[in-house]
Length: 196
Image (tube, rainbow, N blue to C red; front, side):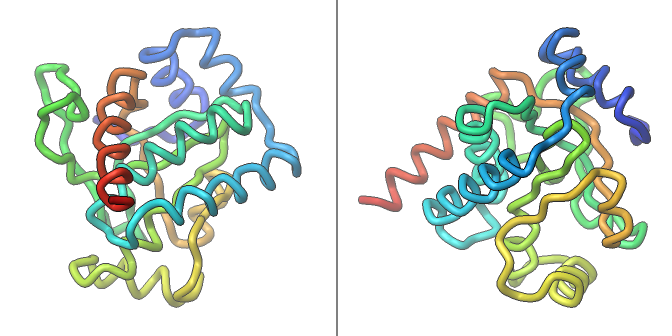
């Protein structure tokens, strides 16, 4: 799928999985300081629930998206696509040509990147876990550590501003509710196992 380059195109992907009313609210959203504080607090709570591993980055992101939908009340959507650093794709995957969801229960793990969009804003808690993973692409690890430092937990910025940070988020798919439900079921199993 070609990369999207504006919010209107991304709104069409939101409409495809959530309807046109959701897409209109998504495109019109501007986050407030109160929303930003709520996002930071929610992310802090969710990061504590997950073991610090890159293996669960997609599950962490899905859980954070779900909790943000409940606690912040903003138009929050889970997005799948390619993460690039300086024009080099570091996390990407191909979507099935038959139209099936790569996030359905029983589907193999999708190798691309998941992040959250709140209107025109990217929210990504996974890049820091990925950067600290031993099997992280070196270009991503170097970039994250040099730009943000080693001890960060959440990246949140305007989608277009992320390019100034050397990060490119190219959305391919906005996850539907059934897609998200499948990830959440796995995530809650992991959380319960880690508590046991």
